[in-house]
Every structure is written in structure tokens, then in C-alpha cells.
Image (cartoon, rainbow, N blue to C red; front, side):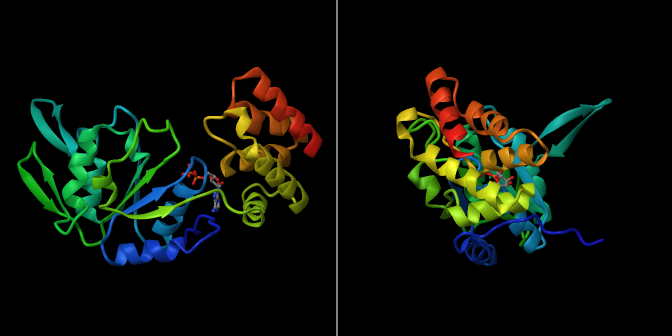
Length: 259
Ligand code: ADP
């Protein structure tokens, strides 16, 4: 059975950077706002390079134990269970740490020796050092705008990665993505992209995060499934972005004018 590659619209030369980083056994850091295609890109590239992908969505409780593994009690015995990082290191998979800056600091410490020439993982609970399989690749994503200044990545960590910056695609590419992802016609796609562009420019709304490609895809899917266009935009674009009554009203007015 041939599994089809996930759809991904390339915007820069990101796949070349990925393939060369992979070839040179370098870890990759993908920076960019939420919903800008980072995860989709990783899924696509893992498929193209024939690699198994293991994704971990990091949050503030994610610790090195979650990644490396732990002892569990099974009947009368205590057995060791590899965590996803250890599995990826042993088997040679792509490990994607989504939103790495959210994780606890010990995660950064744990991956340290995997991000340089050593390419090895030290499992302190086993007293074992595991050399990474030659196909192991570490990828991390990071949203620089998120919680501004609060969760940063230290320069010494960042400099261990080859890095790529993601932005929302240009209007033509973004419309194509909507057509492909949601099956809407070009005209609707263009209107949604125009709405996205307008709201992105309205800095006075004070949004913590602005309209992502993901939100536009969601709106397009609701329209495609038959929800009235304005309602679809209110539900998929406006409401997820803000709880501020005035900001919501301004965005709804704008949407109603544009679609
Ligand atoms: P991120 O990981 O940056 O938060 P995702 O990769 O999950 O974002 O993208 C969110 C959605 O936006 C995807 O599910 C897909 O529908 C769409 N998308 C964004 N950029 C692209 C792209 N370049 N090609 C295809 N789909 C994209």
C-alpha cells in the first residue's frame, strides 16, 4: 500500500534546508507563529525522506522523564519503558518537539548531547549512553511571538540548531492552500485570504495571536460543508481570536463587509 504524502505547499526553500540538515545529521529549529504550517511541513518532510515521525506537543509539564523513559511496576517486577525520545534515538526516527520552549528546562538539558557531534543520549536512570541511529533527526518548533519575552530559548540552545523562519504564506499560496485543504472554490479562498490579511494588519485590536492559515482553512471547511459564509467566518476566525467584545464586533463588521 502506498501512503500518499500529506499535502504541503512549499513557500521558500524549506525542503532543501531540511534535506541538507538531515544529510548532515544536524538538528533543525522551526520558528514561526501558530498555524503557519510548521507541523504540516515536518509531516511532509518525514514522509518524503521515508522516516518515521514521532511528535511530542510540549507543555509546561513536559519533563525529560516523559521523553527519555521511566521504570514502571508490572506485577512483582520493575520494568524500564523507553520514552519517545529514546525510541526515536534507538530506531532512527524523526523526533519533533513541538513548542519546545514550553517544556521544562530539563528537556533542553536532556537533548544537549544529541544536538552536537556526539549525537548520543545519556539515560541517567539506566546509567546508559545510547548512540543515535544514523537516521535519527531532532526537530523543534518555537513560536517567537508567543507570550512575548516570557518563554524564550536561550542563545546557547538556539545555536545548536539549523533554523528556519516560517511566516503565513503570501496571498496566492495561501489561497491555493485553502482550495486544496478545504475544497472551496478560488473566489471564496481569495476572499478568506483577504479577510486574513486585513485582520493581520489591524494591530490596534491588540490580539495575542493573529489569523493563522489554520483558522482560514477552518473557515473554508465550514463554508464547504454548507455553513453560511459570514457565520463560518465568525465561528472559525473571529471568535477563536479574542474574548474582547469590541474587538469581536470590529472583526465581525469587517468580515461582513468582505464576504
Ligand atoms: P503549526 O504547526 O505552525 O501550528 P500546522 O502545520 O498545524 O501549523 O498548520 C495548520 C494548518 O494550516 C494545516 O493543518 C494545514 O491545513 C494548513 N497549512 C498551513 N500552511 C500550509 C502549507 N504550507 N501547506 C499546506 N497546508 C498548510
